[in-house]
Length: 500
Image (cartoon, rainbow, N blue to C red; front, side):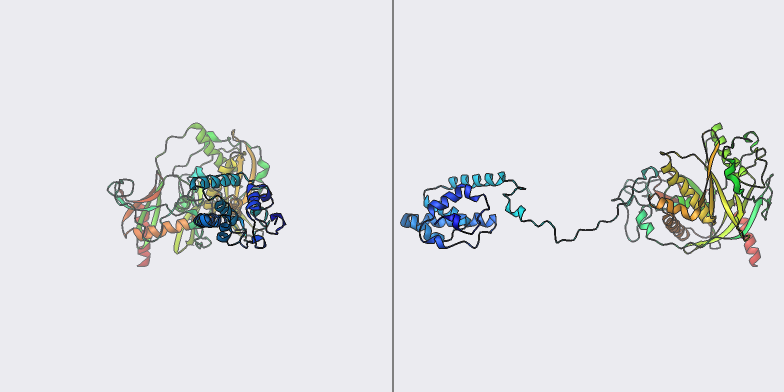
């Protein structure tokens, strides 16, 4: 019987052109024409074992049965494996080496097949659409902020900021000096390593109470201080009409600031993203922790740096009503108005002072403060640094003090005002949210961690210095080498006298 008349597809469409088809036709006589194999779809691994076992039985019976013995040993089945066994029985004198050569030839033929062609039956029968669901991957985080020492490593989650909770001991005294902290610092008390990721801090929701003004003070020319708002200036709404003004006017008569006023809490919040050194005194009296920023040594400013600093005061003079004349003559940076504010960050009640540039009022007469800033005109390659660093500073300063608006004056390199822009403080975070440069919630969570660590570490009636210095991987708490400032001591005495 001709094998081509059977319905069983042994190896696919191309099998009839191979040698196996011809051998089966030549050796397959007898009464076994009516049997067809149900195992034609068996795996190739089963084919190898079946072939070897059939061949073995054929050799043991070939001396007595001849060709008829092959049919008896094969059981009358004509699948792909039986074809190989029948050939082995008909040539009873084959050695193992010859069978190995045949197997090698068959493997070479199989390797030459086109895996993506019509001769690959399994590939052709592969369904076009999988029944498995397509996995949904998490959103890719933007890590393009390495210039700030930001979050680029740890699988996109960024380098750590704060210590992990629980028992994760470090490498004690292994190449790190007697303190085991990487730096042999005199008067070292404690440290807080910055090893919590931005992602971890962003999941921590920290409540922040809306700031409320409880007092104010004014410093006038000559340095005298009054507890009123005589130094508060009114915002000039038509500031956009002054585009083209020269901010250099009055530079020769400029009186520079003697004492730099910087909010302590601003520095702590900014440390979540910015790597800039700072130091502040920490003094605990009657259960209250006082923070006092220390002025770091600075190199003398160049003429150009002094001029750029003056451009900011010159813009403030242009943007306010009751100030010196528009020519800038007589601008004194020591004249200032400060608001005393109470707020709450997490579980910490906070009282702080904040310098206010000017104020405006709503139609119903409610007063609010406005922050004035200057910046170099943006170009395509400076927008990123502006949004990563400057907008972060603008937001921290205005958010903590409850200032709803920031007005930015953009100038060129010659000190000419080229345009102005008004920003809502609450909208600044939304502006950078899509770019994932920084998050306001991370700054608040970081500050809450710092205050918790600080309050639980310092002791009553003791003085410390909290510093953040190179290599900017931890906060260090040291013993203070100088006594508590007189202003804090006097304040504590006043509170004690009022309590009596």
